[in-house]
Length: 513
Ligand code: ATP
Image (cartoon, rainbow, N blue to C red):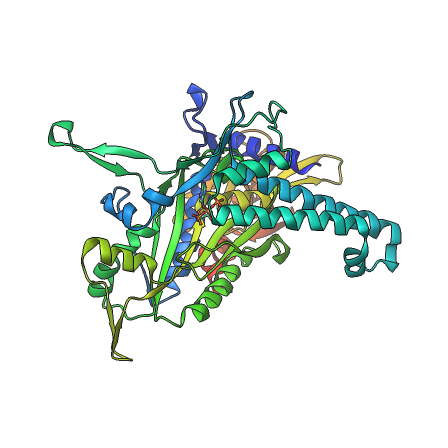
């Protein structure tokens, strides 16, 4: 199946099974804003819990906060967002569609990469066992020509972005003969800067209302609380502050479902360290975060680091954790070494001293910061993409199953009476009433047992138990495993001990130790 079709199926599946709905659906939706349904909110909460516990429970030097979305507007001046949180945009005059100029050029670079990979794959097929890939890449005239063009374009693009040379960005689009995917024409406007922050007014106009912003990242809430937390928590450097919360960006190109939204959620952790030790911590956090991702069990080949070539002026190292989505490797998380830029800026703009006195070195300094920043929604999409499976069964049928890590699954156990009579529903309810205190357990009696299994497969429920007539005598049930579809007879009294451990977030956390 083409990857585009897989993606469409995942989007449709998310809606059909109560994971993600377009916002304001009965009014035909609101662009790039989404709501999470009855199953989506459970999966999302589990992802957040996994992250939160891995930070706050597993590290005795990391604490959490929950800061407000509205903040003093000067914060965004200090952080640089008022002046520099911009995307370069360009319009096509014929289709009236708006694009990010940088994305159009990056897509063009990706096309060269694709062409190179296709050439290599063709040659591998032709030469079979004799194929020497490195040699082919270094000598094939076709590949070399493509690589040269790609590198030249990349160098020109990087230089234009570093200088934020808008005319040059437009010239690259014209020289590369990039067309609008809708109109097919090259009738482009100038490139303009567009600030991504949403603003609103606080207070009545009679008092002289103040312009405030919806935060475009949660990190600044951590920086401006650094002193409060350090002092009240008597924290010693190195230490971290973690936060989960909503962020808002008026994204120009808002496609790809919940990958790029205008209202989304971030899980950010700022780790404050002694200046000069930041590179050591940067590599430690890279390793820790990759382990967190890989503990989900989707396979190491689904992840890669992408180191930034273009660093923000305040950063001295940055990398993205990329995940193999149905539309290619894409950023899910950013890990940045931000120097002492943010704290110094807030020191300057607020006039308050944010120095730390280090009792070990007897020195005062502004701590350096390593940041790990991950989008809940992108993480959700990556989990959904990896879990969505269509399986051909022996009887010729296909089943759609979400192979979610059990600890993240919305429902852990479905209890199904074989028939709706003879006391089986009552027995099944008894089991639910007992186990619901331990994990998310549901009761379902509608339709044939086969249909009920399929329904649970489609939402990723790792276990189902069936209550039959024998259950009334032997107090045993049939326990079915979602992935293997194998069934075993087990005592009701053992269900909790068999299931609870495997479906708990703790089972994931233990893999991180
Ligand atoms: P991109 O380059 O894709 O716009 P970014 O580099 O601007 O992302 P950061 O500012 O580093 O992203 O934000 C950290 C994380 O927040 C990202 O890795 C991503 O998971 C998430 N994120 C950022 N923007 C969005 C968005 N518009 N919708 C959903 N998640 C987002």
